[in-house]
Image 1: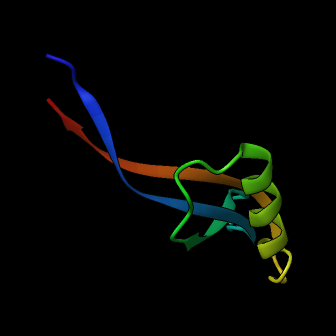
Image 2: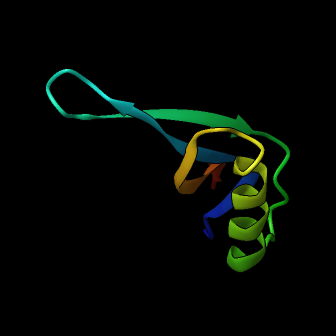
Length: 73
């Protein structure tokens, strides 16, 4: 029996520099963007999320893609 993954959704998350705490630790702010296509190319996704982050006054520090799938047997 073959097991497959059924794609449900993908979310792009942008991380921004929110400054430092009193202890000198980084405050990381995040923004989430839904409706990311299943077959998005990594370079295109990074470019788009970085451009969206530039709309913020905070400095861009990273991005990630979070995918949700079901395991179907």
